[in-house]
Length: 300
Image (cartoon, rainbow, N blue to C red):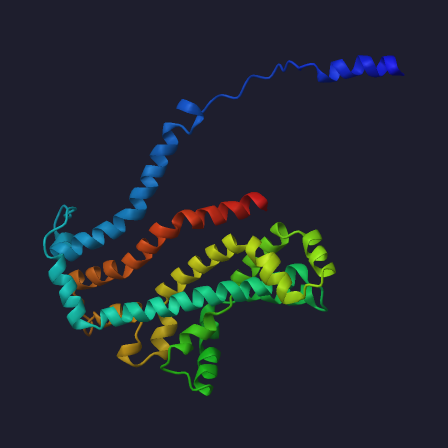
């Protein structure tokens, strides 16, 4: 028996020669090839060009659109258009309102959806799977169908023409609960939860001290997605807000339209300035957002 082992060990430790060809390196230095760079470059152009053209039209005027060929370089009138936007609508106040509402909803939604996701993923209670199925089914219901019931509830609470009317309905979403539940299931160890229970941790401590720090990147991504969605929302704020001092930026842009006519340069200038805060936010947190998405993808 010892002879067999002595013969088998050197054979197992000996390097094996593979007949397979070594993998071909993609591009110089093992990176991606030039077709990938071309594709990414085209994707950047397609994504950035609408924003750039908004600036061109705002700085030139309607002639940038009607001229043949269309003008593709900016003019010198953007500051005058921006000043006209500020004089026409309470644009700064609307930016502040949108920032406050979007940030509040994003932070609270990330926490509440994480709590619900933790409950569905790690806690045992009667009807858990049925309730989660109901949550998933609500994702198939068009948002327009809930407008009238939601307005009746807001009106009954006396919240019409208040900011809480657009904050509270967005504090939880089916997608957010599903997103956080999946991350809780794949990244939070059951053994870690059981060990914490043995040490005397209650459900809140399990969530806040054990689970939430692990899924914080996923919660950050959810918060950023929610922030963008609330910032761009027009229909619901337009229904419940009546006072100009409470308008969000999307309603302020609507006020730039006089009757049925519209000043193209004014609308493009306002839209460009309304988009800048999102671009600035993504510039500072974009890397963290991508890291959170990829972290969940690899762990999942």
